Length: 166
Image 1: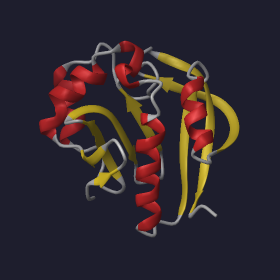
Image 2 (image 1 turned 60 degrees about the horizontal axis):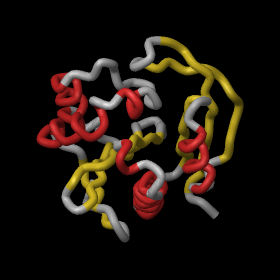
Image 3 (image 1 turned 30 degrees about the horizontal axis):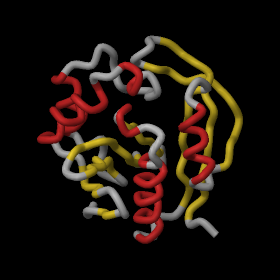
C-alpha cells in the first residue's frame, strides 16, 4: 500500500518501528482502547510491537496517520472487509477520524476493490457512529461484541458501506 496524503494528514503503512509512538499516543490510553475490540488492557509495549510488526494484515492493511510528523491515529481494513480506526485522545473532535477514514476508503475504491466494508461501534461510542454515518455507512442490526480492554461482551451497532459508492 502506498502513502496517502490528505489536507492535514499523511497515511502510510504501519511498521514495527511505529510501535513506541502508537503505544504512547493510543494503546496506553484506556479511553482509546476501550472503544476497540482487540486491543488489550493494560496494553504493554510488547503487545503494541506485536500488532505493529504484523501490520494488522496485508490485504487492505493498516495505516498510521501522522500530523506534522506525529502519529495520531490508525485506520485500516482486514481481508474480510472489516474496517476500523482509532485516534489519539488529543486528536478527538477535530475531524481527523473522518479525514483519515475517507482517505483510505477513497484509496480502496480507486484500487478497484469491490464488495463492502463492515464496521462495528460499541453503543457507548456515539462519536464513532457519527463518523461512519458521515462516510456513508448504513446502520444494520444491533448485536454484542467482545472488548478485550474491558474484558467482556458489550452492545454494538453494525454498519456497512457498499463499494464503489454511487
